[in-house]
Image (cartoon, rainbow, N blue to C red; front, side, top):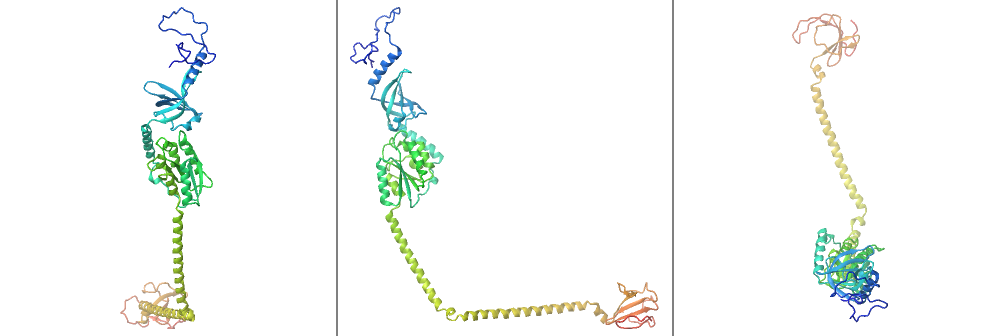
Length: 467
C-alpha cells in the first residue's frame, strides 16, 4: 500500500488532505550525498503522523481480519485490549466497553476469530490498532475444546452431581423467568404457563442472552430473581435455539456457577433438544426447550381439576360409608339392654362386687386359720424346750438370796455355801424360801432324800418367816 504524500507519490492520483504539503522524496537509485543540506521545509513528527493518520483512517474503515486472539487484557474501565496474529504478523486491537455486547463471543486468548472494525492511529505512541466492533469464532473446534475443559473442571467439583438436584414445587404461585424480553422464548414460555397454570404469577427478569458479557448479565439477573420479595418458588432460565457460538454465554463459568448456587430451584430451557449447555447440567431440571421448561414447572390445570373431582368423589363415598356405619352402631345401641333397662348395669356390677367380696372373705378367713395353726405349732415347740416343763416333771431351781435380792445365776453345787444362807427354790408351781442348816458335800444317789438336812417353811408364793 502506498501512503499519499509520504513516499513516491508523484504519480499517485489519490487526493491529499486540504492544506497539506508535498514531502520531498528521494530516488533510491541515485547515490546519497551525505554532505547535502536538508530541505528548508522538513515537517515535524506530528505533521507526518497526522498525514499517516489521515491516510490510514480514511482508507481502512471497513476491515475484516482473521487470526488468533493473544495478549488479551481487560482494563478496569471495561475496555478489552488484545492482538490478532497469524504466522507472519500481529495486529493490535481494542474493544471498547460499549462494543462488547455486540460481539458474538467473549474474546479469550487462543481463540481463532474473524474480527471487523476500522484501523486507527494513535499519534502519542505512533502506533495503530484495529478498533473492533464485531467478532466471530472461526469454526467450533476451539470453543468445543474449551467447553470440554470447563466441563471436566466443574464436574470434578460436583456441580453436576445428581444428589444436588432439588425437586420442583408441585403448585408454584410465583415464577421468575430470566430471558431476553424481545425473544420468542419468552412468548412461548408465557403462553404455555397461561394455558396450563394461569393461577401462577410470572415475574420477568430481563437480560441479554447472547454476546460478550451476556453470561455475567444473566448471572446477575439470576441472583436478582432469587432475591425477589415475596420470594419466587422456581426460576426459569430460557433462550431460543442457535449455534454453539450463539449459546456460548450459557457455557461460561460465571453463569454456570450462579445456576448451581441459586437458593431457589432452577429450570434451564436453552436452545433446542439437541443443545446441551453447562447451565443445563448445573440446573435442578434441564428442559429441552423454553416451552418444555414451562411444562415442567407448571401443573396442567385440567389434570389438577380432574384429580380434585376424583378426590371429591372419594371423600363423598367415604363420608357416606362412615355415616352408614355410625347409623348401624346407633341402631344397635338403641336396642341394647343398657338403654332399655339401665338398672341392669347396676345389678351386673353388684353381682361382680358380691363375688369379689365373698372371695375376699374366704381369703381372709383362710389366712387367719393358717396363722393360728402356725402359732400353735410354734407354741408346742416352745413348750418342749421351756424350763417350766422341766419343773413340772419334779425338778426345781434354787438361787441364793441376800437381803431379799435373788442371785443372778441358779445354784448348781453345794460348794461355797455356808450355814445360815438363805435360798429361794422355784418349783413347777410356787416358790420355797429356806435357810441352810447343814451342808453335805457327799454325792448322794438321785432321788434319795436326806432328812434333817434342810429345814424351813414351805410357803408357796410367800416370803420366808425367818425361822
